[in-house]
Image 1 (cartoon, rainbow, N blue to C red):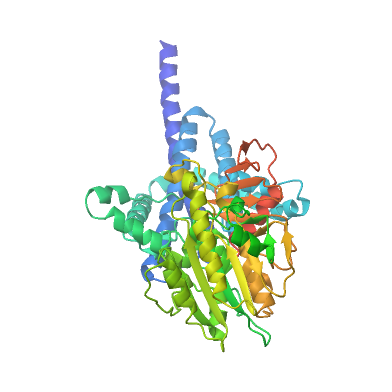
Image 2 (image 1 turned 180 degrees about the horizontal axis):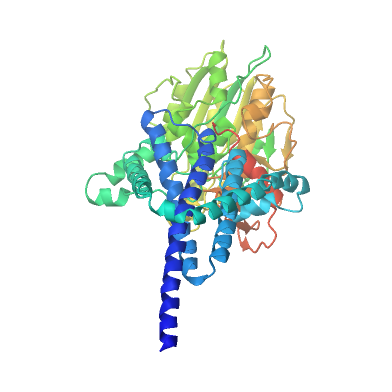
Length: 580
């Protein structure tokens, strides 16, 4: 029976060795939790720091809870099973050290990615940074792998020391208490965030993407079912105040400086929500078509987004539409409107939808007193508003029209009514010293889409729109270069008000009247950035690195080699006005 006793002894030895490896793994995980928290504390200097005490406390709670959970989860899913599979403790510890070194280096790498682009590491971001086509950039990022040998050495030293001192460490009782505290912080992180999400407490919800692999819990649906939250009221508040994870903006980046302006032209802006790029023809809109022939017409023009708010942000702020929620939640005024107020412009405005879009009241015209006119028809209302303007002072007038019935069958009839309203509006003002801008917030599609499909639809019928500028200082011509709503603000600020600052201080577009720079434009919503190229090709990319390619007809294409350099430019531009 000697073989039975030997087998029994080997089994006992195996259990003891495995138990020792598991015990050592706990201490090694705790050591790496400390390292992860120390590195993760760098995010405190990179994020939009909350203003309230509760928001600041939440950051530190989530810092402890998130990184302790991530490290311990890695231990449970990878290291713990290896304790049973790998019998040799040196091999086991060596492999564990290598895994810990790689993860620590990636975390360090992620902090720098977040610092530069305000996004976390993903497969597409990794490809961007190590792309051999961008040799200089690749060499720049290789610097962040330099600490890897040092990290490896530290991990090896602790691995050996803790193995040799394991019996002494096992007698320590405080590790369980620390583990209980860290577990409590992890649970608190999710409970506090769920509360903040339910009650719209933005100093906490804005921290949703502070850390990599962070997916805080929400309980909105449960609370709605229990009657604690009214779903309709909640949605209305989000519509008015913007998404909960919206960040603060640094807009403009610097105080704007201007030259003295002698001639201050009047400005008339007319937008028609739902006006498609193919609607401007002599058959469908004869009067506007005729007006366009005496103006500068931009025939390859795109809105900044696929909603009214998104289009207005591009027009009046010169920013991409992914800033819409930040503008709403922080009530940020447009630099154009602020300048017009400083120059004592008269303000009048009319909206066929009574300014229902949240951007008007929350930000754009929040600090502007607009005169009200009682009228029984839109024609009387527009004429009444414009009649309030005095000739001895420059004025800014905004007319917001809407194609209410957007079915294909009645669309042409609606265009005829809009054409007549625009013609009557133009006839009621003097165009001698007036800049007239006519466009649409966005177009309209006749495809039958559900709500989610509509949110993420960026076909030409939805985002390519007419754009007409009438001004005596501009030549009568058709411009076929690719242009965007974000190009208008730089043009007005430079050509009318002689701003001295570079465009990058207050906008993301180019000067519409002096087109130079990137041969692409950007349309956005809260998830997708849509890169549009001159031939109509689109690349859709989100912050997680998912991307799609579409041709001019909005047919999805396969893309084995995405334009990584272009994606990198978009990432830089996307967060250029985020406050850090």
